[in-house]
Length: 439
Ligand SMILES: [Mg+2]
Image (cartoon, rainbow, N blue to C red; front, side, top):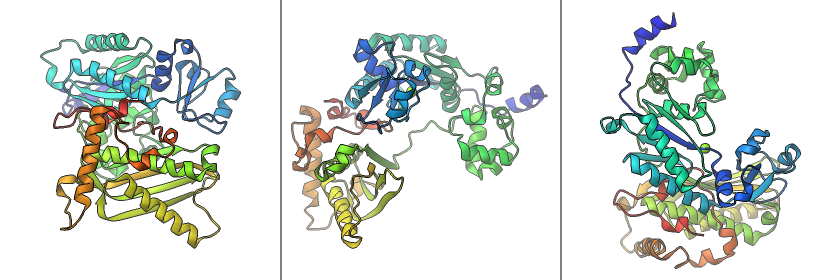
């Protein structure tokens, strides 16, 4: 029965692509084990700071095997595994390994897209005449990464499109190597639940079940119209494509938003000055990223989450597109002060703060910014650009804005879990943001 449907389906499949997906296993924790051999073979958790309420943001393979998962609170981790070793996160070190790994990948393929600090996609489609056997290329990549850092392992997936290649990395961990082909895809899908597919969480699962699709295999053989009905339009068509080997995910999408967030410890929330410094660090991080991408933002959202689960959230629309960290900070602190005056004795920044987040979006390219005739912002914007050029060349501490000198310890940066694009050379061939790789 399946074969019949399959034969019909194969006419409409596109198997021309060759995509490789690399996912580093337990990346942050493995980096710690790479840097300190004492940690190897032991359960290790990485935390932004140490407090019973803090959550581990990465756990070693050994800790995973004992049932500890990312996001668990330290208290809970200790109950499961009293001998768990906790290390504070070292974002700069992780970025340095990221760059090393990307350089290995670029030796093999000119089309490398880093997806996050520990994941990348390689589009080998135009290399089909150059390489005969992509399984052995994957093995070589693994051994080259081992040369750079012998304790770092990765799972590699190969498939005709990026979605299936990513799915293939999930099928074998750690140190996996799986190729999904037209011949074996059904065998693989048979063993999976809907939620095992990247991008299918509870919401999408519900949508699929509503139209009678309960397994990945049923999803693969569903018609375009049924999937469109499930997802409500074009998204359904994309899902049809993904499971039928068409590429719909491999294009560098322009950045739509940038975010930075910080967990706040009890000690930090007790000090207004420290909290102020944390807010500045978020603004500075986003300023760096906007400068690198040559964009200004027109909107921002600042939010504070509290231990009792409530939050305080403010939306900003800027009359003039904005890039400067100090301006951004002034808007935020201004709004906080306004609120606190109006809603006395309520405070925004208090001991209940769990984390703070800032997102900037609605970008405009720096080339299209219109300056008012007598605006001194032109000078400021130029100065900022030059400051970053100097930082890039001579190190991040070569120049500092006055606001960056408050409590330098708290300026410890937020981890680039998401975007790592700022580490890449830009279209003009300018090098990476070296200051992001420095202590
Ligand atoms: Mg990973």
